[in-house]
Image (cartoon, rainbow, N blue to C red; front, side):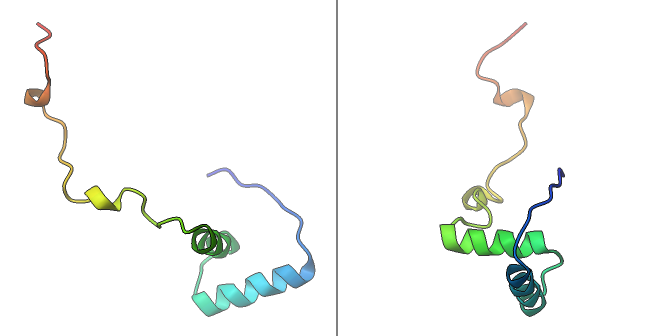
Length: 67
């Protein structure tokens, strides 16, 4: 995972720290991700609809014969 550094005001750092403690998040990145997902209404798992329904690809699943 690529990391970066951003500048924020001390007040925002204090707010992030409070939210981190309140939510039990492991990192500030996790706190920011939760806030963004909630605000932007992005589901935590975009592919959850098909979870458990998709099977592994098998050779017999091919649509054509490539001999």
